[in-house]
Length: 431
Ligand code: LLP
Image 1 (cartoon, rainbow, N blue to C red):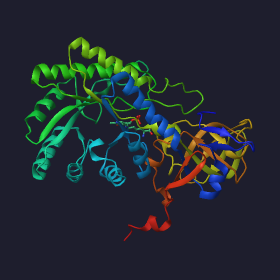
Image 2: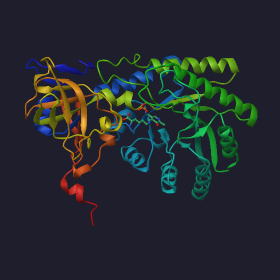
Image 3: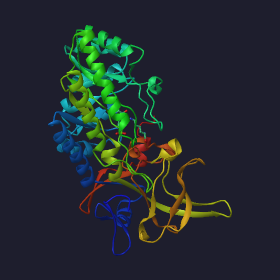
Image 4: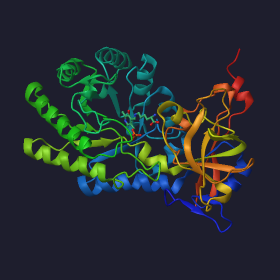
Protein backbone atom coordinates (compact mmCIF):
# COMPACT_ATOMS: atom_id res chain seq x y z
CA UNK A 1 0.00 0.00 0.00
CA UNK A 2 1.07 3.55 -0.75
CA UNK A 3 1.17 4.71 2.87
CA UNK A 4 1.01 2.90 6.24
CA UNK A 5 -2.43 4.36 7.07
CA UNK A 6 -3.89 2.17 4.28
CA UNK A 7 -4.65 -1.44 5.14
CA UNK A 8 -6.92 -4.21 3.89
CA UNK A 9 -9.48 -5.86 6.18
CA UNK A 10 -10.07 -9.60 6.40
CA UNK A 11 -13.07 -9.06 4.15
CA UNK A 12 -10.68 -7.63 1.56
CA UNK A 13 -11.86 -4.06 1.96
CA UNK A 14 -9.72 -0.97 1.99
CA UNK A 15 -9.33 0.55 5.45
CA UNK A 16 -7.97 4.04 6.07
CA UNK A 17 -6.89 5.18 9.50
CA UNK A 18 -8.45 1.97 10.80
CA UNK A 19 -11.88 2.69 9.27
CA UNK A 20 -13.58 0.50 6.65
CA UNK A 21 -13.89 2.79 3.63
CA UNK A 22 -16.81 0.91 2.05
CA UNK A 23 -18.77 1.40 5.25
CA UNK A 24 -17.79 5.07 5.41
CA UNK A 25 -19.04 5.54 1.85
CA UNK A 26 -22.36 3.89 2.74
CA UNK A 27 -22.85 5.88 5.92
CA UNK A 28 -21.74 9.29 4.71
CA UNK A 29 -22.43 9.11 0.98
CA UNK A 30 -20.02 9.89 -1.85
CA UNK A 31 -18.01 11.73 -3.00
CA UNK A 32 -16.42 11.72 0.42
CA UNK A 33 -13.11 13.11 1.58
CA UNK A 34 -11.63 11.03 4.40
CA UNK A 35 -8.82 12.46 6.52
CA UNK A 36 -6.74 10.50 9.03
CA UNK A 37 -6.09 12.52 12.16
CA UNK A 38 -3.19 10.38 13.37
CA UNK A 39 -1.28 10.92 10.12
CA UNK A 40 -1.81 14.68 10.31
CA UNK A 41 -0.56 14.71 13.89
CA UNK A 42 2.44 12.49 13.11
CA UNK A 43 3.43 14.80 10.28
CA UNK A 44 3.13 17.89 12.49
CA UNK A 45 5.28 16.15 15.11
CA UNK A 46 7.80 15.12 12.48
CA UNK A 47 8.40 18.75 11.53
CA UNK A 48 8.48 19.89 15.16
CA UNK A 49 11.05 17.21 15.95
CA UNK A 50 13.39 18.37 13.20
CA UNK A 51 13.24 21.99 14.39
CA UNK A 52 13.87 20.84 17.96
CA UNK A 53 16.76 18.51 17.08
CA UNK A 54 18.50 20.59 14.44
CA UNK A 55 17.75 24.12 15.59
CA UNK A 56 16.98 24.06 19.29
CA UNK A 57 13.32 24.72 18.61
CA UNK A 58 14.01 28.27 17.40
CA UNK A 59 11.31 28.23 14.80
CA UNK A 60 7.62 28.02 14.02
CA UNK A 61 5.98 25.62 11.61
CA UNK A 62 3.04 27.41 10.01
CA UNK A 63 0.78 24.89 8.31
CA UNK A 64 0.05 26.21 4.79
CA UNK A 65 -3.69 26.11 4.97
CA UNK A 66 -4.17 26.56 1.23
CA UNK A 67 -3.61 22.79 1.10
CA UNK A 68 -6.78 22.22 3.14
CA UNK A 69 -8.55 24.79 5.23
CA UNK A 70 -11.34 23.94 7.65
CA UNK A 71 -11.82 24.68 11.32
CA UNK A 72 -10.99 21.22 12.63
CA UNK A 73 -7.68 21.20 10.82
CA UNK A 74 -6.61 24.48 12.43
CA UNK A 75 -7.60 23.01 15.82
CA UNK A 76 -5.48 19.93 15.20
CA UNK A 77 -2.37 21.73 13.99
CA UNK A 78 -2.70 24.35 16.73
CA UNK A 79 -2.84 21.62 19.36
CA UNK A 80 0.40 20.23 17.92
CA UNK A 81 2.07 23.61 18.42
CA UNK A 82 1.94 24.72 14.79
CA UNK A 83 0.77 28.07 13.50
CA UNK A 84 -0.85 28.70 10.14
CA UNK A 85 -0.06 30.39 6.86
CA UNK A 86 -3.20 31.99 5.43
CA UNK A 87 -3.49 33.63 2.06
CA UNK A 88 -6.91 35.26 2.08
CA UNK A 89 -9.47 36.81 4.36
CA UNK A 90 -11.42 33.56 4.11
CA UNK A 91 -8.56 31.40 5.37
CA UNK A 92 -7.78 33.94 8.08
CA UNK A 93 -11.43 34.02 9.15
CA UNK A 94 -11.58 30.23 9.33
CA UNK A 95 -8.36 30.02 11.37
CA UNK A 96 -9.48 32.67 13.84
CA UNK A 97 -12.95 31.12 14.14
CA UNK A 98 -11.26 27.83 14.95
CA UNK A 99 -9.38 29.49 17.79
CA UNK A 100 -5.92 29.55 16.22
CA UNK A 101 -4.01 32.23 18.20
CA UNK A 102 -3.48 35.15 15.81
CA UNK A 103 0.14 35.63 16.77
CA UNK A 104 0.89 32.22 15.19
CA UNK A 105 -0.73 33.26 11.89
CA UNK A 106 1.26 34.45 8.88
CA UNK A 107 -0.79 36.47 6.40
CA UNK A 108 0.22 35.99 2.76
CA UNK A 109 -1.01 37.16 -0.61
CA UNK A 110 0.24 39.02 -3.64
CA UNK A 111 -3.00 40.96 -4.06
CA UNK A 112 -4.34 41.54 -0.57
CA UNK A 113 -7.22 44.00 -0.44
CA UNK A 114 -7.35 46.88 2.04
CA UNK A 115 -10.10 44.97 3.82
CA UNK A 116 -7.87 41.88 4.15
CA UNK A 117 -4.93 43.92 5.44
CA UNK A 118 -7.18 45.65 7.96
CA UNK A 119 -8.65 42.33 9.02
CA UNK A 120 -5.15 40.91 9.55
CA UNK A 121 -4.20 43.89 11.71
CA UNK A 122 -7.48 43.83 13.65
CA UNK A 123 -7.05 40.12 14.36
CA UNK A 124 -3.49 40.78 15.47
CA UNK A 125 -1.75 38.34 13.15
CA UNK A 126 1.87 37.79 14.13
CA UNK A 127 3.31 38.44 10.70
CA UNK A 128 2.24 39.84 7.34
CA UNK A 129 4.30 38.88 4.31
CA UNK A 130 4.39 41.91 2.03
CA UNK A 131 4.62 41.26 -1.67
CA UNK A 132 5.01 44.56 -3.53
CA UNK A 133 5.70 48.29 -3.11
CA UNK A 134 2.10 49.53 -3.41
CA UNK A 135 1.14 47.04 -0.72
CA UNK A 136 3.81 48.45 1.61
CA UNK A 137 2.36 51.89 1.13
CA UNK A 138 -1.21 50.72 1.71
CA UNK A 139 -0.27 48.65 4.73
CA UNK A 140 1.59 51.58 6.27
CA UNK A 141 -1.49 53.76 5.83
CA UNK A 142 -3.94 51.14 7.11
CA UNK A 143 -1.74 50.35 10.11
CA UNK A 144 -1.48 54.10 10.86
CA UNK A 145 -5.27 54.46 10.73
CA UNK A 146 -5.62 51.50 13.10
CA UNK A 147 -2.96 52.92 15.43
CA UNK A 148 -0.85 49.79 14.97
CA UNK A 149 2.58 48.82 13.78
CA UNK A 150 2.52 45.94 11.30
CA UNK A 151 5.19 43.26 11.75
CA UNK A 152 6.22 42.36 8.22
CA UNK A 153 8.42 40.05 6.22
CA UNK A 154 9.22 40.78 2.60
CA UNK A 155 8.60 38.09 0.04
CA UNK A 156 11.74 37.62 -2.02
CA UNK A 157 12.18 35.78 -5.31
CA UNK A 158 15.55 34.18 -4.62
CA UNK A 159 16.03 33.32 -8.28
CA UNK A 160 15.81 29.57 -7.80
CA UNK A 161 13.47 27.55 -9.92
CA UNK A 162 13.13 24.14 -8.35
CA UNK A 163 10.73 22.93 -11.02
CA UNK A 164 13.43 22.02 -13.49
CA UNK A 165 15.64 18.97 -13.55
CA UNK A 166 18.78 20.98 -13.01
CA UNK A 167 17.39 23.79 -10.97
CA UNK A 168 18.39 27.13 -12.40
CA UNK A 169 19.11 30.36 -10.64
CA UNK A 170 17.37 32.84 -12.87
CA UNK A 171 14.13 31.12 -13.68
CA UNK A 172 12.03 32.66 -11.00
CA UNK A 173 12.29 36.26 -12.01
CA UNK A 174 9.17 35.60 -14.05
CA UNK A 175 6.93 35.07 -11.05
CA UNK A 176 4.05 37.18 -9.83
CA UNK A 177 5.15 36.73 -6.22
CA UNK A 178 7.49 39.02 -4.38
CA UNK A 179 10.58 41.13 -5.01
CA UNK A 180 13.34 39.93 -7.32
CA UNK A 181 16.77 39.56 -5.82
CA UNK A 182 19.01 39.88 -8.85
CA UNK A 183 17.51 43.13 -10.16
CA UNK A 184 18.08 44.96 -6.88
CA UNK A 185 14.34 45.17 -6.35
CA UNK A 186 14.60 43.25 -3.06
CA UNK A 187 17.07 45.68 -1.53
CA UNK A 188 15.00 48.60 -2.74
CA UNK A 189 11.96 47.09 -1.01
CA UNK A 190 13.93 46.68 2.22
CA UNK A 191 14.91 50.36 2.11
CA UNK A 192 11.31 51.37 1.43
CA UNK A 193 9.95 49.19 4.23
CA UNK A 194 12.45 50.60 6.72
CA UNK A 195 11.21 54.12 6.03
CA UNK A 196 7.56 53.54 6.78
CA UNK A 197 6.78 54.50 10.38
CA UNK A 198 3.94 51.99 10.81
CA UNK A 199 5.83 48.97 9.51
CA UNK A 200 8.29 46.91 11.48
CA UNK A 201 10.44 44.88 9.13
CA UNK A 202 11.35 41.70 10.99
CA UNK A 203 12.49 39.39 8.23
CA UNK A 204 12.39 37.87 4.79
CA UNK A 205 10.38 35.12 3.14
CA UNK A 206 10.84 32.90 0.12
CA UNK A 207 9.04 29.90 -1.32
CA UNK A 208 10.65 28.11 -4.24
CA UNK A 209 7.89 25.76 -5.35
CA UNK A 210 5.76 22.79 -4.43
CA UNK A 211 5.93 18.97 -4.67
CA UNK A 212 9.75 19.09 -4.80
CA UNK A 213 11.88 16.00 -4.15
CA UNK A 214 15.32 17.50 -4.50
CA UNK A 215 16.87 18.92 -1.31
CA UNK A 216 19.58 21.03 -2.93
CA UNK A 217 17.38 23.85 -4.31
CA UNK A 218 15.97 24.34 -0.80
CA UNK A 219 19.43 24.42 0.73
CA UNK A 220 20.61 26.86 -1.91
CA UNK A 221 17.59 29.11 -1.32
CA UNK A 222 18.47 29.21 2.39
CA UNK A 223 22.05 30.23 1.58
CA UNK A 224 20.89 32.89 -0.90
CA UNK A 225 18.53 34.33 1.70
CA UNK A 226 21.14 34.44 4.45
CA UNK A 227 23.53 36.18 2.07
CA UNK A 228 20.82 38.74 1.35
CA UNK A 229 20.26 39.26 5.08
CA UNK A 230 23.98 39.81 5.43
CA UNK A 231 23.92 42.35 2.58
CA UNK A 232 21.01 44.12 4.28
CA UNK A 233 23.04 44.26 7.49
CA UNK A 234 25.92 45.89 5.63
CA UNK A 235 23.93 48.17 3.33
CA UNK A 236 21.04 49.19 5.57
CA UNK A 237 22.47 48.68 9.03
CA UNK A 238 19.75 46.30 10.23
CA UNK A 239 20.09 42.70 11.31
CA UNK A 240 16.80 41.01 10.46
CA UNK A 241 15.88 38.42 13.07
CA UNK A 242 13.54 36.13 11.06
CA UNK A 243 13.64 33.99 7.95
CA UNK A 244 10.62 32.19 6.51
CA UNK A 245 11.57 29.52 3.98
CA UNK A 246 8.08 28.60 2.76
CA UNK A 247 6.81 25.12 1.97
CA UNK A 248 7.27 22.68 -0.86
CA UNK A 249 8.44 19.18 0.27
CA UNK A 250 7.05 16.59 -2.12
CA UNK A 251 4.98 13.53 -1.20
CA UNK A 252 4.39 10.09 -2.64
CA UNK A 253 1.35 10.15 -4.91
CA UNK A 254 2.13 7.02 -6.88
CA UNK A 255 4.18 3.88 -6.41
CA UNK A 256 6.77 5.41 -8.76
CA UNK A 257 7.31 8.50 -6.61
CA UNK A 258 10.36 8.38 -4.38
CA UNK A 259 10.41 11.49 -2.19
CA UNK A 260 13.23 12.00 0.31
CA UNK A 261 12.55 10.78 3.86
CA UNK A 262 10.11 12.92 5.80
CA UNK A 263 11.85 15.89 7.37
CA UNK A 264 15.09 15.49 5.45
CA UNK A 265 14.43 18.61 3.38
CA UNK A 266 14.03 20.74 6.50
CA UNK A 267 17.16 19.13 7.95
CA UNK A 268 19.11 20.00 4.79
CA UNK A 269 17.79 23.58 4.87
CA UNK A 270 18.76 24.07 8.50
CA UNK A 271 22.19 22.63 7.96
CA UNK A 272 22.80 24.97 4.98
CA UNK A 273 21.42 27.89 6.96
CA UNK A 274 23.67 27.26 9.95
CA UNK A 275 26.71 26.80 7.72
CA UNK A 276 26.07 30.04 5.92
CA UNK A 277 25.42 31.98 9.13
CA UNK A 278 28.69 30.72 10.60
CA UNK A 279 30.62 31.61 7.45
CA UNK A 280 29.22 35.14 7.44
CA UNK A 281 29.17 35.61 11.23
CA UNK A 282 25.49 36.30 10.89
CA UNK A 283 23.28 35.51 13.90
CA UNK A 284 21.11 32.46 13.22
CA UNK A 285 17.60 33.76 12.57
CA UNK A 286 14.33 32.50 14.00
CA UNK A 287 13.00 30.28 11.20
CA UNK A 288 9.54 29.66 9.85
CA UNK A 289 8.44 26.91 7.49
CA UNK A 290 5.11 26.60 5.72
CA UNK A 291 4.52 22.97 4.77
CA UNK A 292 1.06 22.21 3.40
CA UNK A 293 1.00 19.14 1.18
CA UNK A 294 3.49 17.21 3.32
CA UNK A 295 1.21 17.58 6.37
CA UNK A 296 -2.16 16.68 4.86
CA UNK A 297 -1.55 15.10 1.44
CA UNK A 298 -1.07 11.49 2.48
CA UNK A 299 -3.52 12.01 5.34
CA UNK A 300 -6.46 12.04 2.94
CA UNK A 301 -8.24 9.88 0.40
CA UNK A 302 -11.41 10.44 -1.63
CA UNK A 303 -14.18 7.89 -2.02
CA UNK A 304 -16.51 7.79 -5.02
CA UNK A 305 -19.23 5.43 -6.17
CA UNK A 306 -18.72 3.77 -9.53
CA UNK A 307 -21.76 4.65 -11.65
CA UNK A 308 -20.93 2.96 -14.94
CA UNK A 309 -18.20 1.43 -17.01
CA UNK A 310 -17.86 2.15 -20.74
CA UNK A 311 -15.62 -0.08 -22.78
CA UNK A 312 -14.70 1.57 -26.07
CA UNK A 313 -13.13 -1.33 -27.98
CA UNK A 314 -9.58 -0.67 -29.11
CA UNK A 315 -9.61 2.77 -27.49
CA UNK A 316 -10.08 2.77 -23.73
CA UNK A 317 -12.28 1.85 -20.80
CA UNK A 318 -13.94 4.58 -18.84
CA UNK A 319 -14.94 4.03 -15.23
CA UNK A 320 -17.40 6.80 -14.40
CA UNK A 321 -17.75 8.07 -10.84
CA UNK A 322 -20.12 10.40 -9.01
CA UNK A 323 -17.60 13.24 -8.56
CA UNK A 324 -14.70 14.54 -10.60
CA UNK A 325 -13.01 17.83 -11.36
CA UNK A 326 -15.43 19.61 -9.02
CA UNK A 327 -13.84 17.83 -6.05
CA UNK A 328 -10.41 17.11 -7.54
CA UNK A 329 -9.36 19.44 -10.38
CA UNK A 330 -5.69 18.43 -10.26
CA UNK A 331 -5.61 16.06 -13.22
CA UNK A 332 -7.53 18.55 -15.35
CA UNK A 333 -5.21 21.36 -14.25
CA UNK A 334 -1.80 19.74 -14.00
CA UNK A 335 -2.10 16.17 -15.23
CA UNK A 336 -1.37 15.05 -11.66
CA UNK A 337 -1.19 11.31 -11.09
CA UNK A 338 -2.85 9.26 -8.38
CA UNK A 339 -3.25 5.64 -7.34
CA UNK A 340 -6.81 4.30 -7.36
CA UNK A 341 -8.36 1.16 -5.88
CA UNK A 342 -11.72 -0.55 -5.76
CA UNK A 343 -12.21 -0.36 -2.01
CA UNK A 344 -14.54 -3.39 -1.96
CA UNK A 345 -11.82 -5.69 -3.35
CA UNK A 346 -8.65 -3.87 -2.41
CA UNK A 347 -6.43 -6.94 -2.20
CA UNK A 348 -7.23 -8.16 -5.71
CA UNK A 349 -4.77 -7.43 -8.48
CA UNK A 350 -5.38 -4.22 -10.42
CA UNK A 351 -5.66 -6.08 -13.67
CA UNK A 352 -7.37 -3.46 -15.83
CA UNK A 353 -6.11 -0.22 -17.29
CA UNK A 354 -8.78 2.48 -17.12
CA UNK A 355 -9.61 6.15 -17.40
CA UNK A 356 -11.58 7.50 -14.46
CA UNK A 357 -14.20 9.97 -15.70
CA UNK A 358 -16.11 12.41 -13.52
CA UNK A 359 -19.70 13.61 -13.65
CA UNK A 360 -19.09 17.14 -14.93
CA UNK A 361 -20.20 18.21 -18.36
CA UNK A 362 -16.73 18.34 -19.82
CA UNK A 363 -14.57 15.77 -21.62
CA UNK A 364 -11.50 16.85 -19.65
CA UNK A 365 -13.21 16.00 -16.39
CA UNK A 366 -10.98 13.06 -15.53
CA UNK A 367 -9.38 11.85 -12.32
CA UNK A 368 -6.71 10.15 -14.37
CA UNK A 369 -5.86 8.05 -17.42
CA UNK A 370 -4.01 4.75 -17.84
CA UNK A 371 -4.68 3.83 -14.25
CA UNK A 372 -4.37 0.25 -13.08
CA UNK A 373 -7.59 -0.77 -11.31
CA UNK A 374 -9.39 -3.90 -10.15
CA UNK A 375 -12.28 -4.81 -12.48
CA UNK A 376 -14.95 -2.27 -11.47
CA UNK A 377 -18.69 -2.74 -11.21
CA UNK A 378 -21.40 -0.12 -10.80
CA UNK A 379 -22.03 0.38 -7.09
CA UNK A 380 -18.41 -0.27 -6.11
CA UNK A 381 -16.57 2.24 -3.94
CA UNK A 382 -13.56 3.69 -5.71
CA UNK A 383 -10.78 5.21 -3.59
CA UNK A 384 -8.34 7.83 -4.89
CA UNK A 385 -5.29 7.95 -2.64
CA UNK A 386 -3.26 10.86 -1.25
CA UNK A 387 -5.90 13.50 -1.93
CA UNK A 388 -5.60 15.32 1.40
CA UNK A 389 -3.91 18.37 -0.10
CA UNK A 390 -5.26 20.73 -2.77
CA UNK A 391 -8.43 18.73 -3.40
CA UNK A 392 -11.16 20.02 -1.07
CA UNK A 393 -9.38 23.39 -1.01
CA UNK A 394 -9.58 23.62 -4.81
CA UNK A 395 -13.07 22.18 -5.12
CA UNK A 396 -15.76 24.11 -6.95
CA UNK A 397 -19.49 24.08 -7.48
CA UNK A 398 -19.08 23.54 -11.20
CA UNK A 399 -22.34 22.25 -12.64
CA UNK A 400 -23.80 23.27 -9.28
CA UNK A 401 -22.46 20.16 -7.69
CA UNK A 402 -22.54 20.54 -3.90
CA UNK A 403 -19.10 20.33 -2.30
CA UNK A 404 -18.43 16.97 -0.65
CA UNK A 405 -18.28 16.15 3.03
CA UNK A 406 -15.04 15.66 4.94
CA UNK A 407 -14.90 12.98 7.62
CA UNK A 408 -12.00 12.74 10.02
CA UNK A 409 -11.07 9.25 11.13
CA UNK A 410 -9.07 8.49 14.22
CA UNK A 411 -8.25 4.93 15.25
CA UNK A 412 -11.17 3.62 13.22
CA UNK A 413 -13.82 6.08 14.46
CA UNK A 414 -15.17 8.70 12.06
CA UNK A 415 -16.65 12.15 12.62
CA UNK A 416 -17.89 14.74 10.14
CA UNK A 417 -15.71 17.85 10.15
CA UNK A 418 -17.15 19.58 7.08
CA UNK A 419 -20.77 18.84 6.20
CA UNK A 420 -21.80 18.05 2.65
CA UNK A 421 -23.26 21.10 0.93
CA UNK A 422 -26.98 20.99 0.29
CA UNK A 423 -28.89 22.36 -2.69
CA UNK A 424 -30.06 25.15 -0.37
CA UNK A 425 -26.41 26.03 0.22
CA UNK A 426 -25.99 26.17 -3.54
CA UNK A 427 -28.74 28.79 -4.02
CA UNK A 428 -28.08 30.66 -0.75
CA UNK A 429 -26.59 33.73 -2.43
CA UNK A 430 -28.75 33.71 -5.52
CA UNK A 431 -31.09 36.71 -5.58
N1 LLP B 1 4.03 28.87 1.35
C1 LLP B 1 3.75 29.55 0.23
C2 LLP B 1 4.07 30.97 0.17
C3 LLP B 1 3.15 28.91 -0.86
O1 LLP B 1 2.90 29.60 -1.95
C4 LLP B 1 2.83 27.54 -0.77
C5 LLP B 1 2.19 26.84 -1.88
C6 LLP B 1 3.12 26.86 0.43
C7 LLP B 1 3.74 27.56 1.47
C8 LLP B 1 2.81 25.42 0.65
O2 LLP B 1 3.47 24.58 -0.24
P1 LLP B 1 3.42 22.99 -0.03
O3 LLP B 1 4.19 22.66 1.22
O4 LLP B 1 2.00 22.59 0.09
O5 LLP B 1 4.05 22.47 -1.27
N2 LLP B 1 -2.42 23.76 -6.18
C9 LLP B 1 -1.11 23.19 -6.41
C10 LLP B 1 -0.12 23.61 -5.35
C11 LLP B 1 0.06 25.10 -5.27
C12 LLP B 1 0.99 25.49 -4.16
C13 LLP B 1 1.03 26.95 -4.01
N3 LLP B 1 1.80 27.44 -2.92
C14 LLP B 1 -1.25 21.68 -6.46
O6 LLP B 1 -2.38 21.18 -6.37
O7 LLP B 1 -0.27 20.96 -6.62
